[in-house]
Image 1 (cartoon, rainbow, N blue to C red):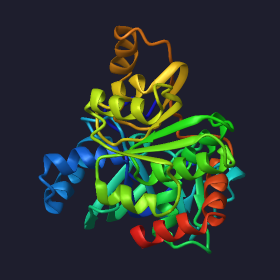
Image 2 (tube, helix red, strand yellow):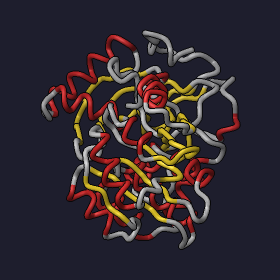
Image 3 (cartoon, rainbow, N blue to C red):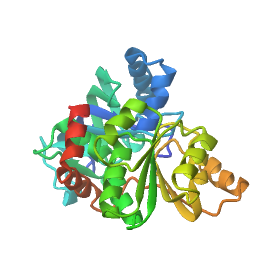
Image 4 (spheres, rainbow, N blue to C red):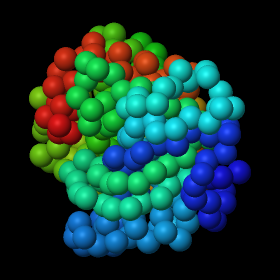
Length: 326
């Protein structure tokens, strides 16, 4: 399995059942970029050096600390004669891969820009898409960086739609791009009922999300400080807590805030790569909390088309994303 492998072979030529991609942009997953950014003290050059070293030694962008990757944008350069036609790819197509960089053979020639505000890195290099891989052509009606950002977290809105029911009290922790899409989908799924809370440590980012009208109650807090978050949520819900908590935070240590803020027999959905199964499971056991813990799957059938269509139908969300990424 390429994800579990310590190192992949990214050398050329490709095999008959593979697709070669000329890579233009790496969309690093939030947990991985946050870790590298902290390690580099926000220095773009040091972040670039870390990425180069990871790809050089592992043959893929598989962060050795977080274990996560991201996805990429590029153009189809070559299609092997035995590569399955199910994706409908053609040479020259501009595509985004929907499989993790942690399992994608990758070779970098140059890193040309590190975009700290969007977790995106512009590069020159090549990647290999396996026959089992998933990719999608970029839509013509959305700016390319916005589309890439949406596709990076395409599983978020469709998975949220599966979990949210009218009348629920729902809380989203971490309001980056995946958190934003989860909030917007939850708002639509609630259909004017229930209650929607948002937890974010950055007051400016929280205020920007509030202006979109997606949140009923805003919680400015560091989700690694579980008791502080719990006390605010307990007060806001008058002790009822939440039916569903969706964790999209990009830092480690937020598991217990989510567990504590969920009512008995409620659900916590961890849609991030910084979560620790051990911390979540043993932490819930330790406080005697009977809640269902769900590990997010970034893939769902038709998730890419669902996410893109969802953004098209949410003009305020689309405008916010375009202002941030393009």
